[in-house]
Length: 188
Length: 259
Image 1 (tube, rainbow over the protein chains, first blue to last red):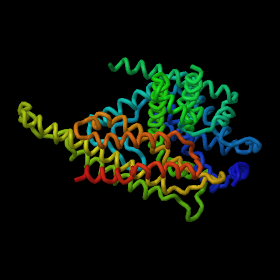
Image 2: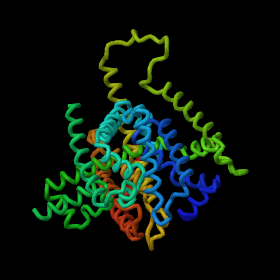
Image 3: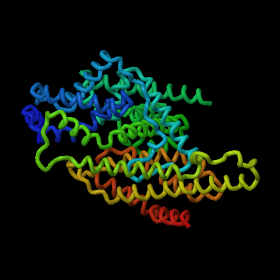
């Protein structure tokens, strides 16, 4: 099913098309929003809202353009609406990492408490550093790393040039290095 | 100096996620330069650390996202907007039951694991001063735990390399093979290797350390590759592993660690 066919079926209210859409984009949208909210339930609520909005606006999709940037533009707009209306907590880090460090495929689990603590500490630093990035840099990093968008898709989603995406990623990297080094200094 | 600048620009692009490929240090000359130039080597090491850290960060979101598709469909169906097609209802109830059983097993395991909180009512005042014997016991536990971690790392490496060698997922782009899954696992293993440094530095682990260092070079190569690679690239990795008997040595090391 092409992007255009999928969106036409969605516009007609075809439930199978919605399931297909959720399989294709649901997780990617969720991960992007989870990157902001850091809370599974909030991210699920937001993702649900994004899907309903996409269903309502399916007729507005311009089939000449790729679908992913259009979807993520809607996702980000909805997140911003919530930020404005509800004073949404962007930095709430409510996820306990102690039992979550297992790698997905091989069932790896650090057996020693000290080791698990070390992993959590390293993880926590990275998370804090990402959360301290300026919003645009964080947005680009999350679209790239959490949602797996290509650079040109990010450019289209944010309505900026490809060069601007690259330069934002470079700036984010430099900033992350500085932030991680500062956080290292806090510990030692 | 010109070469340093060119290499560091590519390393920076790799660290930033602008360039996902091994292109940062592609040629043999580049790799030789990295061995000889401390500044570029340092930049490459930092780029690797950052990439591995960010990969681990993205895995956290990946774990949180498990099962969201079913939950989203259930929510949308619950709103009545999308009626489920006959016979196509998602088996989320079964998944929830499995998740509950796993959670129960986890809680039980935590309750029984060494180092877990004492049971309510158990006395802590009976704990004697740390004697030499208990210190020795603690040391043994640490050594044992360290051995287990290395063993798990070796086993996981074996699985990843075996999966990589057998992969046949087509990329629909000429003669290319899709290795995204294996690539992410390789990144995860590289991160784990950093955490194993103390264990590998223990006396008696020199051999396994050399093996892990060799493995790291291959994993680095895999982790830095694109999600789609030429079939010949897989062959090159296979040849490299064969030439050093890496998989056989991995199996032997795992067996020795198990005994």
